[in-house]
Length: 180
Picture 1 (cartoon, rainbow, N blue to C red):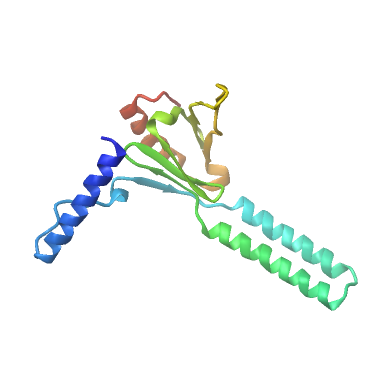
Picture 2: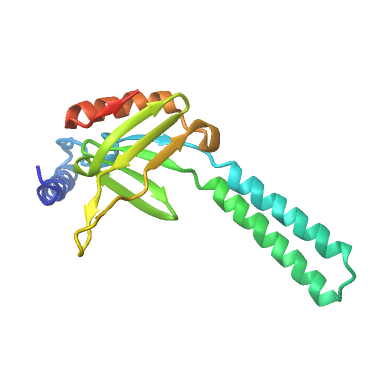
């Protein structure tokens, strides 16, 4: 089914469910797409701890030198902003969402989505999952390949075993090469 058709079915079913709710009848089915999706969440420790370490170094260097009051307050502001950025990055959890025909994640503060026809291969190793994308042609005819999606247990604390099992089912349903 095409995406536009799926959106139309979802819109019509949500309107029908609203009407049925007003009449006191149960809904026909849930139109929530996240009910069919599996979401694997991780936790980012490396970058926040690096930012806190940089803030501590900046604080030590700022307090070690003799400065004016204005520079001292500026040092505290910079340290506070580094720590705030570390907290924001720590609280924003990275994820992999596996829908029925697409994968999505957050990369460089933007939501990225791959459909099944854009995936070349899925590799699962001990502690890591790599999703390789197919190349796309630019205006000059050169094949440009996007960066691979890499999910690791060491850096972002993903449950790579569960991700590998779910991605194996995803790969089988769309005939995508899968390596263990």
